[in-house]
Length: 389
Image 1 (spheres, rainbow, N blue to C red):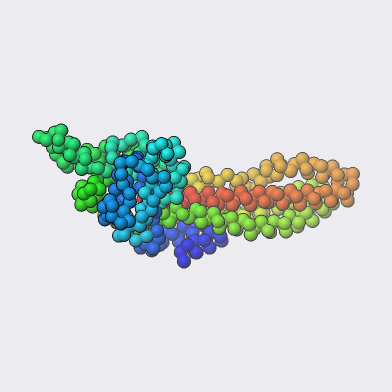
Image 2 (cartoon, rainbow, N blue to C red):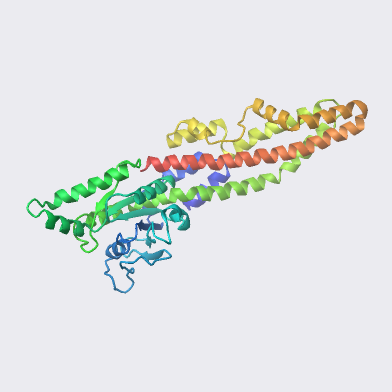
């Protein structure tokens, strides 16, 4: 029902209401939504073992993810979380292998299809991890960083420095190293967990499960917000198609006006007709000045942040005049020349020029405003996601 209300508001040009509809939904209302979590990281870092531990399984159990020293995975494998409702865990092939080199990893696995990420690393924070962090941030998505195989590090440290061994100090050093690496990529308050899949009741593993369970409604809301630009795009395109059918009527009307035997009438009719419908399109789609101000206030952004993503001409008559002068000035000169020598033929030429020019200009105007609407709404939804992080 809420999604239907969002669609209706977008179609009717009530972008502020569309955003408000999402803002007013309580977190509990997102419990029924699904969340796809991608488990990624370098080969051999313990991604599959982590999934098994999160699902309460051991290697070899029925339904457990396959583990091993060699990463032979070619396709992502999906596993349902038996505890968290609507959550699926995707075991991705390791990054940086022969089959999935770092440079093509994100594109080949289409990381954009996943809504949340857990990056797994079994060593110090590396360039592979940094690349994944940057890509996830570019998509506007969130992640946890899990430092795996803590038991191996602790055993090694105990053997090397048995007299000065301090488990908590070592774990804290590992956490800080990972936090520094993630923070260096521009992430504020990075979520880092040091775990051992062999000991799911030790170290940060219980905290990982608790944090994921606590933040699940928020993560599902975030995922829902990420899905809305695609939903809005379909609605805006549908509206654009519906309005496109009305353009011929306007163009034909202006054609008849342009046929009046008064020099210059064709250009004036085209200009003022274009100007009028330019204003109407901006208002109809909800990206006129007043609507933009209300939308900016709704998401707590300056209006300039929304107008900055708009590439169409704007709503000022002078801009519309400049576009018409640039695009149809030459055609109008031909029409005016015909008026002086053959008035009847000149009227036909003027009307024809007005018809063709207005039709294509209005189509271009409609397409530009529709594209701007999608960009503005995407920017507003991005601001709303950032407000709730």
